[in-house]
Image (cartoon, rainbow, N blue to C red):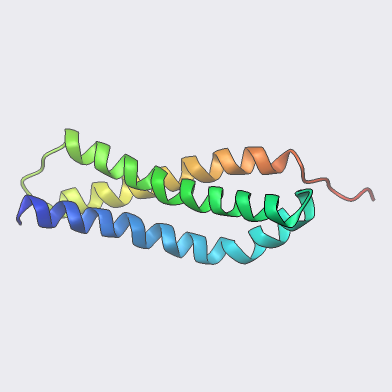
Length: 109
């Protein structure tokens, strides 16, 4: 497989998986941010910030891993791209969860 086609395919995998995660999280995240942010503008800012982080982190990891690894079989490259994407999402979600988790309070029982 052509190196450029493989790079584009790996990037599209990263973007597609990130968009799927954002689709699942957007509704609950908007509700949560509206509860914990002081105003609508702050909630919208943090929503866009979160979306950017969850798009950039996996893509950056995929591109970095691709730069240092070269496999003879394109399936191995695509598999590593998926692993890097999921790893980038895991890191991004962890960082965001740590920050948002500070503001979420559990009701007293």
